Length: 254
Ligand code: MG
Image (cartoon, rainbow, N blue to C red):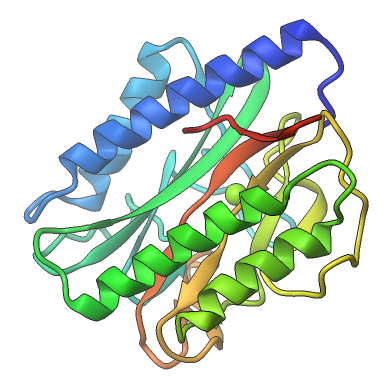
């Protein structure tokens, strides 16, 4: 969406603050022995306690065969995104890396964010993968300036991930957000600087670099949602909703 007035702007900012607080509670809860379903239950309860609504639950993304059945996406190790926490319930183990992706609607305005968290001690390669992917998000945000183009974001993200020796997952990417969970424009995590749609003040975007420690190829699980790396390598995912202001991007879900 494009923010056009102070009420929308205030609701966006408040929603982002709330979402960030829920994600921090989930980060604190994620530990060996905790199940994916417990994380999902906590996410839903915290969102509803705040008077807001989960916006992934019941949402059918383009191309999906059924509505998403949970509040939270929990994607472990070689699962890239959209792992369903309340169907084949998994228990987190020491050494896992776990992507937590969550959206909520506050006064009708939708915000979306994700973090990848280590469970206890994780190997150096996983730490490096998470650092590079988070750095790619920061680089993308840095390029999200009115007057730049979508391709500037894409290129900044790609460079950060590939310079660290990892692969960009090409099937998935960022998107407009605010009125709906997924809006135009699609924001690939790879591309040519200066290409694509012009960025303008007031745009609300969800940037979400998604990386693989190995090859970029993906497979979609029979549940119709869970994407995994084809070669079984680990994947990381970080996401913020941002608002484009005259001076640059304001991170809404920090
Ligand atoms: Mg998203």
